[in-house]
Every structure is written in C-alpha cells, then in structure tokens.
Amino acid sequence: DQQVKQNSPSLSVQEGRISILNCDYTNSMFDYFLWYKKYPAEGPTFLISISSIKDKNEDGRFTVFLNKSAKHLSLHIVPSQPGDSAVYFCAASLRGAGSYQLTFGKGTKLSVIP
Amino acid sequence: DTEVTQTPKHLVMGMTNKKSLKCEQHMGHRAMYWYKQKAKKPPELMFVYSYEKLSINESVPSRFSPECPNSSLLNLHLHALQPEDSALYLCASSQTDRLSSGNTIYFGEGSWLTVV
Image 1 (tube, helix red, strand yellow):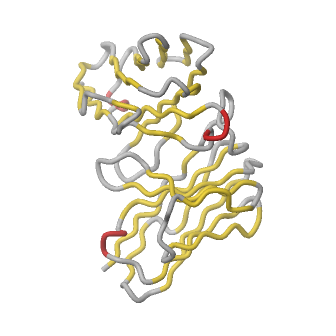
Image 2: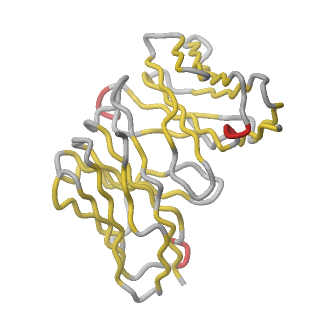
C-alpha cells in the first residue's frame, strides 16, 4: 500500500509560469516532508522540507505548502525555468522510532518548455 | 557543503566477481545509508548505519555486504550478484538517523551498477 502518492507522473509548464507538484499521504504519523529533485543519471538533490507544525515553507523560487487535514502537500516553483526540468520526489518520515526511514512517492517528471 | 561522494560512478561486473562501492562524506554526519534505485522508481532503503553501527538492514540479500570503517566512510561489498541487481546505488547521510526538520538526508550522485 502506497503511503505517499504522487498521482501525476508528468507535468509540462511554460517557462516563466508556475509549476505546482502535488503529493498526498495516508499515514497521519508522518511529521516531516521533503522534496527532492532528480536529474537522469544523478542522485536526488534535496530541495526543500516542511515540518508538520508548519503549513508553509519558502526558499527562493520554491514554496512547499502542507495541508494536514487533507494529508496533502504541494511544491510551487515560480517562475519555472528550463533547468527545473527533472523528476521531483515527495518524501515523508515518521515521528519517533521509524524516523530514519524516508517513504518516497513515485515521482513527477516536470518539463519546463522554453 | 552538503556533499556525499560516491565511487565509482559506473561499474560493470560479472556474476562471479567481487567488487565494492565506496561513499564518503565530511559533513560530520553520524548516519549513513545505502539506497537502491531502479529506473522510474523511487529509492529503496537497503541499510542504515548510525554511529558506525549497522542499525537497519531492510532484508537485503547477503550478496550485499555493507561496511562502515569510520564515521566518514561507507562501503558496499558486492559478491555473486544477479543481473536483476543492476540499478543505481545511492549513498546518503544525515546528522543522525532521526529525521526531523533541520535533519535532512543528503544523497550522493550514485553508482550505476550493471551485472552481466
């Protein structure tokens, strides 16, 4: 059973516009959420994270929103740039004893069109 | 500096070979990880080392043998692998193995392994 879901396998956005990547989770014990970006043939690069005590975290062009009641988070990239084209993974970790484990979504491939 | 360095970047080995993947970090992190990633799939956790001791083994076959010689180094010894073990092997580290806000896992670029 998938506990972290990224229901859109791919997304295309025009350069300069906003990219919104979505992630849903089912386990209410998740308390820390991360977004990673992955280019082909490279390891995932940490982008931004959010703790469950917050509902928004911003870092430059990247903003993550967390809606705990809906068990939903989203990553906003604005403005989108061609270099943002990559696969984006949402990940979550549990409170307490299981907190070493990152549960990843299957990823969303973002294509930013010049 | 959030760098995790992995060598080699590419490795081709036969099913009877013995080889090793190496990982290094100098961020003072006390937790190190091996993940395996197949194409179009998310990373899967294999092993967790915490303070140089193996704390988690996610039911990985014994043909994969991890080793943590010191707090900066992590090896993955490979022996008698199968073609289906071909994948991207990712090393990662974090300050401790308790993930929380401010304690994030950082990944290396990975080692592409092909078993022939």
